[in-house]
Image 1 (spheres, rainbow over the protein chains, first blue to last red):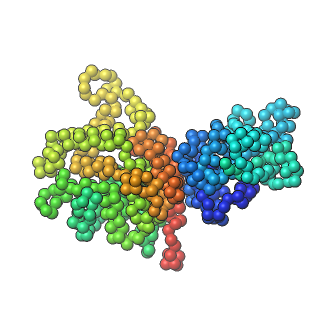
Image 2: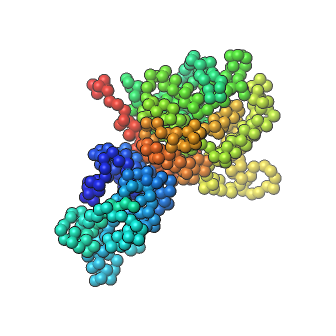
Image 3: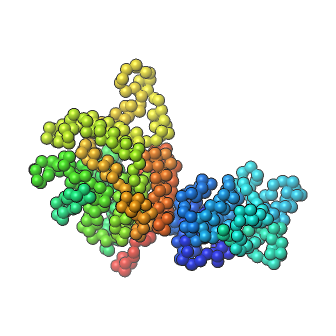
Length: 196
Length: 388
């Protein structure tokens, strides 16, 4: 299992109702269903991922999250999860608001654009960062709204969002003491557990 | 005739008629004292009758889902693309039943059948059927085969409505429910189209208030108009443009009222063929069953409340250019099931074939269909008998 998913599953209560926005091939939901007996739904837009979810018996709903989540009722899920997808949304702030409306708790993960490698790339090469982790060039990237940890936490302050937990991991999704010390510089992936 | 029967066809099939003696009480307050259902089956029912799939038909469909009635048959059954060995509904593993619904005109008891009380055809006196009535008759069909629980019930359009009604009325009797290009109820616009179709039929002088069998005439013009109108709603604007555009049959405009555009002659041809093969009273009855379908009505108009007791898993599929039952209508079903915390998946297939897309193979549609049916097959309980 992807290491960030391993961290997330710890934050999901057994027998709870979970919505995974951008669920991919259903890896996390599949694990949560088997190990935590959750009632889960994935939302996905990629055709192959949807077929894979259906083959696995994962509940998956085809939907473009950018079109909104208005049809889902307030507080109808215990946990709403969005892993590595916030940066591809047209309106990430509105999506976070919607997630908090639908879910009692939300888990959000995103790549940290404040990581030293990204900073170094831009500072020294004068070009938009391209790495193994973020392999796209500026014109073809689906990642249209990059932010740093500090940016996200600023949004949380502005929107009155309560951060319950924060974990920062590196490229291999490992915690290292230095990351905890200097997260915005050394952490590559942010994992936030938030509520209203 | 097919040059040779394709390998993935169920081959030559023969319908069978099953007689039911137990009276069937209907939503309208009347009852059918006894009735026949004509059916076709494909594949083999396993020892514990747990691999059965029921396919419910749409407005003008029937029991002939797949295969050919004879080597001379020009066309296979209406869902041959989806049913057969190795096809999404795999007849190597599943036992499939197709039936003609009550009130139909392909062999099950309907307006053309003789009313035992008058010794004449029922005609317009045949009771109006509802989707729930059909489900009840299909449940008795399941009993006839000893099928306690269907592996899946599958249907498109009006057929999808029957599948949904099944899940509500008999939660324990199906494991999977596949609802394709359907809606939880008709919109005012849907009902309006049906009403124009009904008016076209009932105002045909040959209709004779539905008692046309005695006169040896059928309301051909009315049926043709009804079908032409219906057919427009089954196609999409894009699909029509692509297939017909503004093509002229003779290459030039003739300044008269004869059919000149290809679409005009296509619709006339389709309407005419249909009017030869379909019963006018059945058409009226089927459109009424559509209009009346509204399972949420019994639950304070909350579909989520209507499905609160369902137990099966759902697969809901819609098509992008379907404007008869648009993707929004399918999403209403999905939203209600999610609200009710039921297991459901949903896919929206890109197609320019409008409502008809549910009958036409399309790679992504067939992929999703197959992927879901693999789950249906995986969920068939394995008995010791089969393992030995």
